[in-house]
Length: 435
Image 1 (tube, helix red, strand yellow):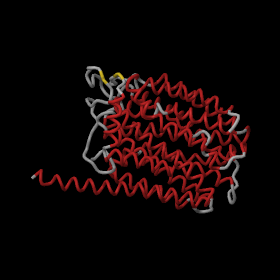
Image 2 (tube, one colour):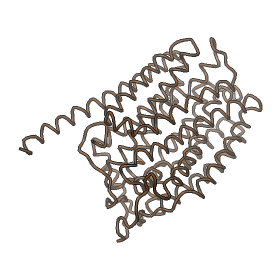
Image 3 (cartoon, helix red, strand yellow):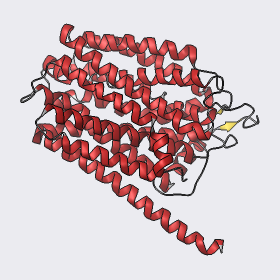
């Protein structure tokens, strides 16, 4: 079974594959057993990274459910308020690569711990922002701090978990993301309704602090990581190599397009539901994000989907589900909108889990940089989706936001179809050589 959805020869990340573009020590590539379900440490690792995912997504999208309240507080438009989300995700996209390089020198575990600590500290300051500009600036700093977590986590899993259990392990980390996104939005919605959006952001900061403490005490020490000295030229060469790999570039584009849909929908949905014909209060709007539970299930089940359908098949199912949800959400009935959000969320998280795990399995060198480039594309898609989705909503209402999402879905389908044709051509080219 190919490791990626876009058609390429199989590359399995082994313990002996170098993971760094930096100068490494001469230690053996693998002197310890890798983690897998049933072995000591796997459960601790899973729960620790789950907690980290909860903290990261709760902080990263903490203002998203509060955008109507933030707009009212600062007399700002939807497009202006959307920058409190886009600044965080955009800064994460810009800093994820340099911080992943630092993780090659100082360690995945150390980088993840430091990133969470700084992000939580900023999160406790965000509620005190005196102006929209200050709020956006603090959110950008918070996003930059969080940049050290996602790529380091993916590289940690690729090094410490057996390849056959990698998709399931990454799925659990992504599931933590969905729980964090859901719990943060629900908490902020109800707290904001009672005490205002500043109190809501303070509660999210405290939740993230608790998760960061859990992560620090549970995450196992890395046993297969080989540190090295930083080498900017080698880093640039590794990045150029990844960007020259057509398979990886297709995976990066798929992640960005999926996140464009998700960012647009969840940035704008609060504005739609606060208006006629729904006119929902802030607390109820926050509770809408309970549909994130669907993302927890679909991301954790990504491995089983791939086993049954293959990676391209799983992607086709994910995009079809997302597109159906977008179309269904056009209805003016609340039940239809909610079902649409369920389908969008399920399709997005399944597609993200498949694409991100494919990157981790495909890269045989510079795995942290390969994952970092995916995360950069992914969060740039989030920034673009949030801002463009808000602009589209202001210009043409919810239908315009849905049209933007459908364009992104069409992009995923086109890339996957192209990858399928490439895979078939490669197989045909190999037939004469095997006779």
